[in-house]
Length: 180
Image (cartoon, rainbow, N blue to C red; front, side, top):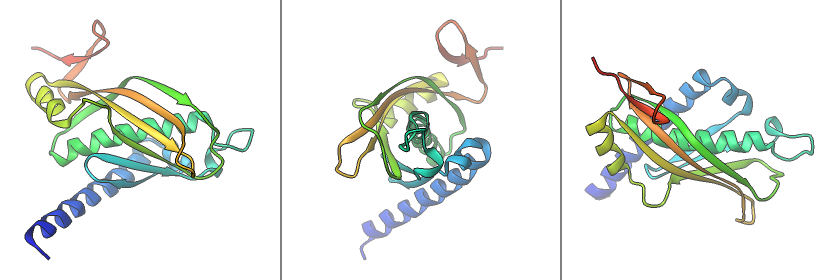
């Protein structure tokens, strides 16, 4: 095993520790996630995979409830941002500013949602803005795929992060720092 392999293995262990701690905290802080039985199955620093069984997320037709799909995709994106912050030792409030969901096919089995940053968004730029302004926006994309690889549903969402000393500024639709 080389030094690079050791470093990569250690980095993944740290990510897994953060992922498992957030999994536990999400179940406490967001009670519906316990009923939905969502799990943060994987996180590599760039993408996050969240899983959910079909049975607790059924609709009246026997397939996945659209609200469950939207919730799991939103939560997967939110967790992606939250874990990136925790990895950097930051403590911020993260809000969904807006989102859009597309439902393309019914989901008849347990499902997973794969979240990643939207095209042209980077964590480096996001954290640089957060550091200089105390708030930052970031767009993320998530998909639920069927067994054949086709997309069943997708979500595009914009998130706002605020340092804990910040408050809501209703005039700009996001948040801003308090002064004083």
